[in-house]
Amino acid sequence: MRPAPQSFSLSLFADNPSPRATQAQPSPPTAPAPPGVEAPLSAALTALRSGLDKLAPSDRDFAQSLLASASGRGLSEKQTAWAHRLARKLTSKPVVIGEMAGLIALLDRAQTNLKRPRLLSRAGSVDIRITIAGPASRTPGALMVTDAKAGDIGRAFYGRISRDGVFEAGKDLDPDLEPFLLNALRSIATDPQGAAMRFGRVTGACCFCALPLQNAASVSAGYGPICAEKWGLPWGEVREYHTHA
Image 1: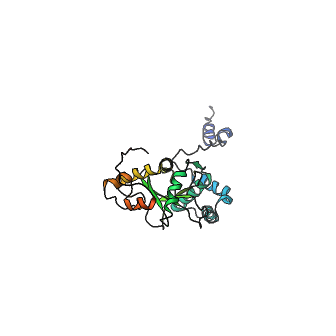
Image 2 (image 1 turned 90 degrees about the horizontal axis):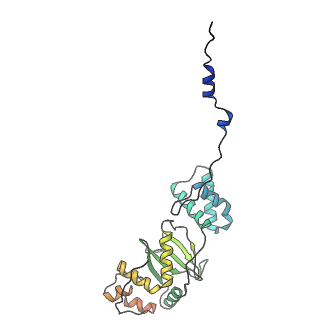
Image 3 (image 1 turned 30 degrees about the horizontal axis):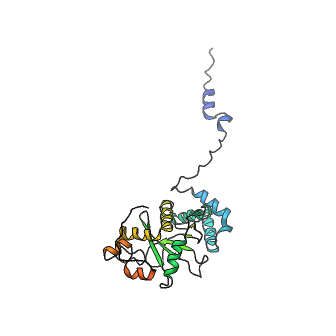
């Protein structure tokens, strides 16, 4: 009599792969996120855990609350964005903008006539504002870079520039905006008055007070006669305009 077919052996190997086949394979190393692309949340949380002591007290408390939420119910979309912002603050390296003497002299001179002088400019499609940090700031005398939104409540903080020209990114600086912002800041540092001219001609608004410019001389300068007097700058000559970043 013929023996029964040994069909069980085929199903045995199909249902139970060899031990070698079931061994866990090592995960490939995580590549750094390309510029403008957010790193995974896990990387941001790791950076926060390892760098808590490097954060300012207010940021440290907030980071601890984010870490606690991440370990429990998880982070909301808004909390996730904040985790990335704080992590960037820890991992980003200072960037040298350049010699700031011309811009600092311009702002310092204006302080004799204005309580809080400000310079407006444009980074990509975003208008920015540069002011001097007051004595109550933790970095008095530094140049603070924010958005140009009217008023102080809800203003986006993009970073600060030390008086020796080193930029430190702020919590609201988006990776997509950063290269445009750095390019704009270097341009302003190199030629503050030229930056004022470009802003006025592009926007039609004064680079100091943001009011509309009323005539060709003001548009050419980037500011009007009243601001020219307060800032100690020339006004009245229509000058040639060169478009550059």
